[in-house]
Image 1 (cartoon, rainbow, N blue to C red):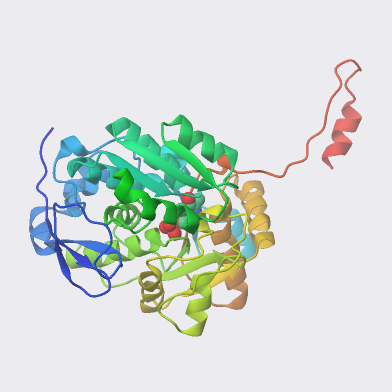
Image 2 (image 1 turned 180 degrees about the horizontal axis):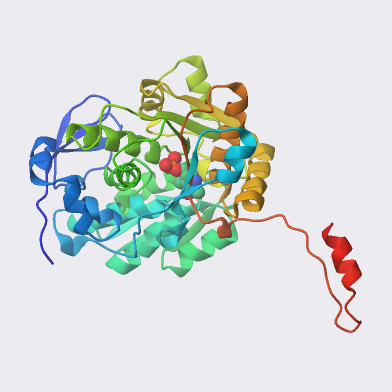
Length: 411
Ligand SMILES: *Cc1c(COP(=O)(O)O)cnc(C)c1O
């Protein structure tokens, strides 16, 4: 395989700007804030062109020059396809919205966009000689970690709240992670990892506590810009838990502008949370840069049930700089949008994806999103991992089939 040129210059504390050396293992900065990877963007702009991508495979590794992995042999692949942008024309017409595009991330390995972040984290862990990784998870991140680590030959330890759905827990364990359920929330599981990492020789892969998951999630921004022919949508609605994706996309747009691949236009970034766990929304409304931890978090959208985010200020900065906003939706609104999308678009969302659709519906009515704006929603995971409310009818084959009854039961 041809080696690509790599362009990482250093890492930087997202809070203080303090510089850290590349090619060394890092967790948080000395100030306990996320580290961001920095590149020689000028050199990238002279070395790669947008057109040179056309010849590359349709996977996110096509953006290699904007990613931190130095050696191709450290890349672990499970089929990181470019995910489709599905137009939701029927809902667009019904709601009088501008164009609605749903980026369907459920098609990625392990069925969620966590694959993007963990593919990068695991490749970098392999490159830097990590042997054991650990993380707290509500489900999808653990599955992606387990899959990439099993493929890379790295040992994994995963800690879930004990109400994590069985399908997620089974997936994580079946893919080879040593899997534990704790009677608490994700932050309690995070504490188990943080306090045990010394003794257990774990590399802490918690959201934003290592620098590379952001780089993986950044590929959503690179990819959507390429898919829109090097443009960005007017509005991006993102279901925000730890905020990795929102922070990553914002970083992607800035890097793309600096290498001259997009202009200065930015989407308005809208962070969606659930009413039962909305720390970022609360901080946004209060005009604060940091969010207080949310007590008694509860929502059907487990991926955004994150009571405290290390990168809270990065999420809030991006939302404010972009002239966006943060909004909470109720579980009822999520459930209703989930059904609408299935019945009217034939798209099976995950609850978090449904939350973005629910937010759009709400904000078209409030007027914060205009009918002239092109809006991009994110379906973060395959809907198949989540409960679906359905009605169906039984047929007794010991009796003759009653077609009149079939006709009536459908009306
Ligand atoms: C992790 C996750 C989210 C939240 O993503 P962040 O980028 O960490 O905010 C949303 N939905 C699903 C299904 C997830 O797994």
